[in-house]
Image 1 (cartoon, rainbow, N blue to C red):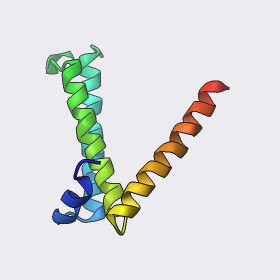
Image 2: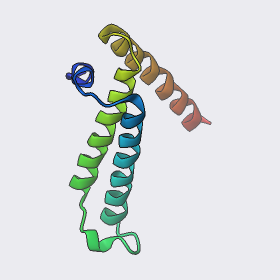
Image 3: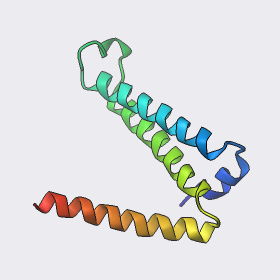
Length: 98
C-alpha cells in the first residue's frame, strides 16, 4: 500500500518511538474531532471536518508504519495487512449484527 513499508525502513525511529508518535497523532485527531463537532472548550481551535480527515490519515500512516516495522519483509507486511484487516473487519461486522 503506497510506499509505507519502504519509507518505514528508511526512517530511523525505533518501534517504541513510532508507537509514541501514534499516540501523539491520535491525540491530534481527538482534538480535531472535538473542535469540529463543537465540544465544549474546544471551539476556539476552529477545526473542520477537513482537519479531521487530515489527522485521521496522519494516524493511519503512523499505525501502518508500526505494522511495517513489526514485519520482516514487504511480503509479510502486505499479507499481514490484508489478513488482519479482513479478520478485524469481520469481527466488527459480527458485533454490528448482534
